[in-house]
Length: 382
Ligand code: SF4
Ligand code: SF4
Image (cartoon, rainbow, N blue to C red):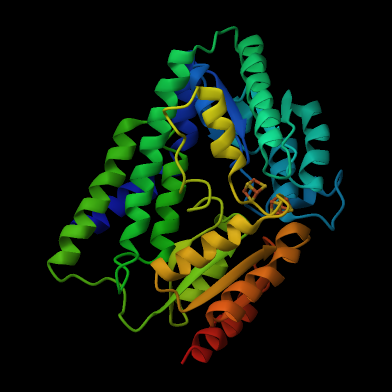
């Protein structure tokens, strides 16, 4: 098998093995803390000796069960998160000692009140704007998380451990950034769906240095083979950036519709891609302050105003030579949906790059419609 295909295959196989690795870690005495959101400071959880695990939230399977307790007119990500917990079908939730939530959007913060009945849930009060006052408040919230972890896990979170984990998480971000940046080449060395698969693999790495090494190997091999003339993506494929709500299994239908109809995704700005990783934690600052500044700077639509996301999108559009932008909206996600107007205004109106808003849920009933819309969108680019 070709070396790049072999690496990608190893990564694909590692994703479903994630729950077994967590089970073995728990049997070996490790603690697991469940997380959902990019605002969760993984460094603090790791400094408490626990494994931060991204909980299942991106499948339609548990939604019907969730709707027994939650309104139907709610974002599928929130319903799926709760449904997996309620039906005990998320293996990571099953093993976790504590769940960490944040007050991002209204649906999520209210859902956490119900989730707390299923598993102790620590909710961090996230300020919804960026200012020096807000940095101070968020710093206090991060310190509160450390105290809760100390109390729950019976450990002490030391400054030394925090500094060590900040450095390691920064290294993880750098490794992912190097892979993402390869897609600035024309044509991109990997398809967007392959990059998305690597993102999913990264999530089940749980900080394992060997798993990170495999991503480094992939990036190195891709660069070498590209320099030797190998092209895996057609030079005619239209270069598209995906932005909006978080990516995941059930919205891969959108990525397929883009890439099977003449496009290639050169960047995912979403959570699960560039947005939470493009800035590092400043290692020269005191740890809690550095973490507060980094995490509060994540440009999620729950922030108001959220000009930083528009600036990021404009920068990415230039750096990745984007020819189109797809704003992925999960049904009933009001914040991203409202912000879509501003994305069109800045990117299409300001830079002349065509934008399309795609509103969808986790069910697969709109696959044909997505194919038609994405085909027409790519064709329209000429
Ligand atoms: S989009 Fe916002 S609320 Fe959702 S995971 Fe990302 S940071 Fe959290
Ligand atoms: S996608 Fe939107 S509605 Fe859903 S959890 Fe994220 S911010 Fe909330």
